[in-house]
Image 1: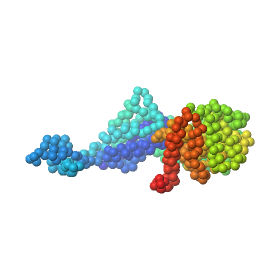
Image 2: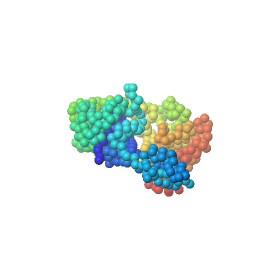
Image 3: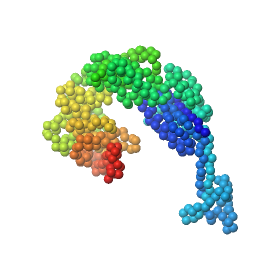
Image 4: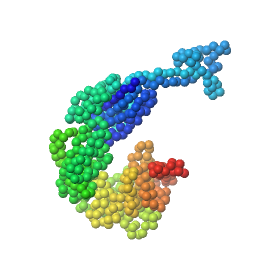
Length: 549
């Protein structure tokens, strides 16, 4: 006989970035636990909103499967006396395992024969096991940050407020903190924050009536559909960033999209300066016509259509303040040329043991010059490269990048254009940061690709030199990403470079207090890069044995 299982943890709003991984973990952990305890089940579903994480299993066996055990007993010599009668050893073995002499058999183990018995361990009721393992499953989920509240010792991203645990029609006897599991959940915080009595069969429908769309996939499709419809009503195209859509999805339980406006004067700013506060700070979706940004955006509220005009006005007011700041920063930044900002980099610590950002710029400049010689660049390009590396990090001390660090490099390019600096140099100030993530474009321009490689080499060598190396999932300086990026640039641009030589050159730019044993550090980095190269080739579809060869 099978029943349904519903397990919901209700809490204060969990940060959106925590939710996708918790969904994956809960599903895997539950599957492994049920298999470990021999409980047969059909599909496991996990759903999430900002206030709830839900485990829902359509069909789960009411009894644990029986277990057949083969138990080893005493050796033949110890089991029987000279008259072939059972000894105390054999009798004790049979008594402790509730078997009779007819249930035993002999089997060779090593050089001797031993007595064995087969024993059937009857399965327990699934209800008993679930009451034991569901709290274990919940607290096996690993979050990047957790908290304790009140006098409780349990940890979770936000305080737990209610627990629903129902197996068939039975409420499970589970207690988390001081909260006993029940069959009562809660609706939308502002639209219907009332007790909702439910069963697994009525869970989704009753919460929908209480203004909660539990199924995150359904909620995501709703948001996408609303955005697309609103953008069509304006004869515009919405830029639906999938990462932003996912984040917004886990910020709302009942989504309602709306269109907002902002003053057209802000369109005179670089489009990224307008889009960044929209997306990164306000979670809005920008609108475009014929590929050009227009002075409208789409926001998503956690609620219904009621008083949507007030919500829209409030969001417009907040965005206006952000864009006013951006315009002020942009105008102020343009008053000072990038070359004049370079000395300010001496005041920014890159890493305590590795010096300031200015020190890094000097090292990157020397590595870039070394690579330029290796690639036999003409003198004119070398001169341009030196000018570029000198101002490569100058935008870090601008007001704009200080406020919106996502615009690093991009603002360097825009300010270089404002300063009438050569367009090739301006472009390299942006492309030096490519690729930013796996699958991103690599720089194709000569200056950008050389600077990008040089910067990554300096970061990797310096980090390994001071012992800050990736361990497990811990990679504070993103060295794996840096190495993969460097490899991708070299491969995709078909550059003939000896990485080992460049690494060794870079290591000599540090004094002996930073890198005490150059050979050891270079060897360690060489192994690290080869591992990344292996990962890259396997991701590209090459057979692992060919890659290893």
